[in-house]
Every structure is written in C-alpha cells, then in structure tokens.
Amino acid sequence: MKAKKTSPEHEAGKTEEPSEENKEETQLKECTERLQRIFMEYCTVSANSNTNKMPCFKFVSLLKDSGLLKGVVKTSTVLTTTEAELYFTKVLSLLNEKGEEREIPPTASPGRREEAEQKRDKLDFKAFYYVICQVATRIYPDLPLNQAFTTLVSKDLAKAEFKAQQRSGLPGAEKDVLQSEEMIELKDYIHRIIGLYFRSYTENTIMEYDVFTKFCRDFGIFPELCNKSVLHGIFYSIAYANSNVMSGSSDLEGSRTSPGKKRPRPMPTAAKKKALRTGEYMNEEQFVDAVILCGVKSKAFEKEASSLEKVLHFMEKILQSQGIAKVKKMVGKTRISADDIDPLFEVRARYREYFDRRVKGNNYRQELLDQVFADDEEEEAPGN
Image (cartoon, rainbow, N blue to C red; front, side):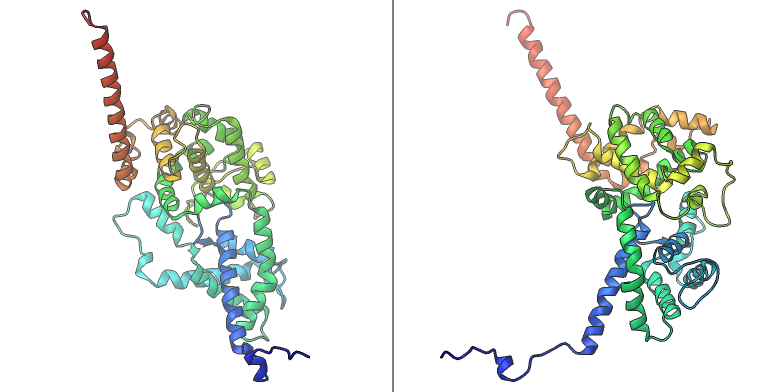
C-alpha cells in the first residue's frame, strides 16, 4: 500500500491562515476600492468626463439609491434629505476654509472665476470618503468605525452601484474616450468655447433632441460630418443617464452656475417639461460630451488618427462654419472680440505640435499637387 504524499504544512500539523486583523485590513481595502468606483459612477452621471468631483445633489441621489434616504422623518436606519445635505455642506465648508488651492486669483477671467466657484461646491474622493465614514457611524452606531464602513459599502452602497451600472447608456469604448486624461483636459478648453453656444440655443436651460440637431445643422456637423443615425445614437445614449435618476430641476438651474448666483431663466416650455419627465434631454456638461463624440465618430477624418486628433480637427472645422454668426445674432452681439477672430486660440497654443504637423502635411500635399500640375503643363506645351 502506497503512502499518501503530504505537504510540509500538513506534516507540521497546521496550515497558515490569515489572521483576523489581516482579513479586516483586506476587506477594508476592497471596500475602499469599491467605494471609489461608486464615487466615479455617480460623478459621471450627466457629466461623463467628470470622474473626480461630486456635487451635493448627486450625493443625495447616491444615498437615495442605496435606500438610506427615505421621507422626512429621521430614524435610526435612514437619513432625511436635510441631514444628508448637512453632512455634505459641513465637510465642504471645512475644505473651503482650508487650503490655498481653492482661492480664486483676483486676475481670473469671468469664465475661470465661474469655473473655480463651481469647484468649491463639489467634493473630491478624499472628502467624500470622510462623509461616508460619518454616514456609516450614523447608520451603524453600535459597530466599530471600520466595520460600520465596510457594512455600509458592501450592504447599502452596493445597491446604488448596481443601479448606476444599469443606468449607464454610453458603450464602454465611448465612455473610456471621454474619461481618458487627455480628453478630460481637452474638454475643459472645448467647454469654455461652446458653453456659450449651449446657453444661446437653450436659454440657459436644457437641450432637447430637436435643438441639438438644429445646432448640428448650423455648425455644419449634419449632414457633412455626421449622419442622422450617429447624432440620434449619441444624443439618446447620453440622455439615457437622465431617465430614472435624480430630479431634472438641477439641470434647469444650469450646470456651470454657482449656488446663490443663478441666472434668471424663463419658465420651461411644454417641450422642456416633457423632456424633464422622460429624461430625453442634455445639460451643458452632456452637450460638450456629445460634441466631442461627434468629433470622434465623424466620417470626414482619417481612421488612423487618434481620438484627440479627430476632435481637434473637428473643432477647427465646425468653428469655421456659419454657426458662430448665428449665435452672435441670437445674443445680439455686434462687437468683434479676440475670441471671434480665433476661438481656438488657447487650444492652438496648448496643442501646437498637432496643428504644426497638420500645416506641414497640408503644405507637403500642396507641393505635390503643384508638381503634378507643372509636369502636366510641360507635357502639353508645344514641341513636346
């Protein structure tokens, strides 16, 4: 009879098992990573390229989707909306009192100033993590902090994670493009250029599909660069995130306006009210995402070009259309500014290498054409 082979650990009479302390540390790490994914999912709702800043209304929506926010009566297992907002604003106020990086330079332009004001009203992941720890101790007061945190994430916030994944209307590849570091940086420049166009076409509210297609016609996107099916797919993939999600009132308030400084807006029309009910609309952040995706999917550019190069070329092309003149007419602008001469001035300075390469390529192609025409003329000349 053959003897059974045994491992050295078995021969020693025991196997090494992770200690309780190591198990807790591993679980804490896994829950923190999961919380970061949930944070990014909710940041990207209605703003696909925003992965690192969460406003208050999205925080409230996250708690609501988790089943932690019910009614107006405070109980031991759920929060009220007011209580959730207090947790958020308390941490926000501490951040705004701290840190010089949040100060706005006195020489900042109105656009940059508004953008900086907007960032003051959002939490990064570190601050969000701190708020979630506070919520965890509130919901599970009898548990130690680490255990309360892991329970909240794995039991409650997991429900919100599932709902967020179901809501995501954009295909993974398109979402990856919008969330890439290079595209997030470019989007910031593009937003400063076309944010005015969105507000002009929508009267500072929301954009329905018909208004989006009108913009695309005016700026030469349709039918020259993108066909109707592409526009339809982009609009409804992005707008899908608005259905079965938080109230659309925040979108009517404007995506780039700080609390307490809201622009006066007209009452929403019947079409806008219907769009808010159905979720078939885009806010300003989503509109910028849609324009970027139009550039990526445009049929007019080389397939070999990167997404960044396609969007840069696309922006150059649409800003040479008659769309800018139509926007000026809408807003009653008659004076010419530096931005009117070249709206892409900042973009050209930042991506000079790409534009220089394109100019050289165009000059080289023109030289080849000139040479071909010169050769043809020599052949047709008398005596040859």
